[in-house]
Length: 359
Image 1 (cartoon, rainbow, N blue to C red):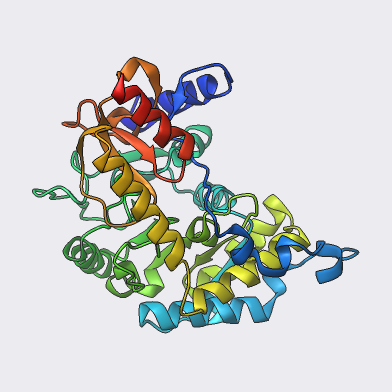
Image 2: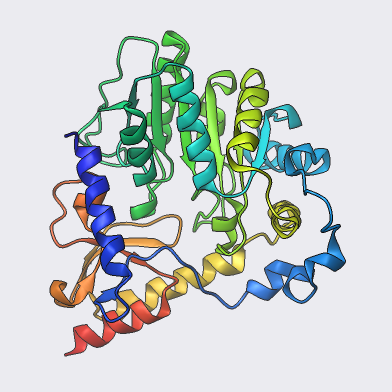
């Protein structure tokens, strides 16, 4: 069994315990909570979708040319790389896009892919179901000092996650540059899981993966729901080479059907906010304030540097047996004993970590 499939088993064990309402304090959860939800939702916070859109018709999100143009414009503006509507596939959540991509790999006859750890566990789920062999190209993670991936001298498919969400670290620019050069030399396709992009703590917006990797050989997944930490709506989009847009969009709609009218309206709202100068600045400041509160409370014995997102990788002072948490094993990582992923938007988890540390 590959380490990726062992990691999947570990995630599934955590999910089983998570369903036990009387279980241990879960500090590595996936949900969000913050004071800005109503502001970010705008009219959706207080107006029924039936008054904002026609609920008698399918929402046809992929046919929404205005939305696709808006998404292309925001990425052209932020990433300083030209995008057009012919490169955009709007969708209902990151997981559905991952399912479509993995199905497309299988239908295309791909039975072996390469990847930089970590990758989201749902990749492991689909690869196991489809009989696709995942080949890890490095024992280290991209932000490690001595990171030196063994990129194959062949045309293949490479998966990478940017940023490394569990630790809030972007893939370094020099790593992305090297991958881009390798792509051009081999003609390899790269899939970037950028679900946690555009949450940089320094306020920057440009994502290096957009400029460093050739657009005609790169797919990049973006999740506005994570950008706003509003997960009850399902909204994501895939930036794809123009020659792959139509086959992937056709496969996606046939696999998953259309999104709800509410989700299509939210996709527009999220794109508008991403184009706005304010963006998610208040959310990011809130995340940073929660980090400072936890850091100065004595609830942590050590923590890894964090630059983006709302997850912290740290060693809590609380007894490990009192916590349900994702540790280094859940990310195919070594050398970080006692470190776990902590959701900085989970107020109950932050309070619990402080209370347990004080005992």
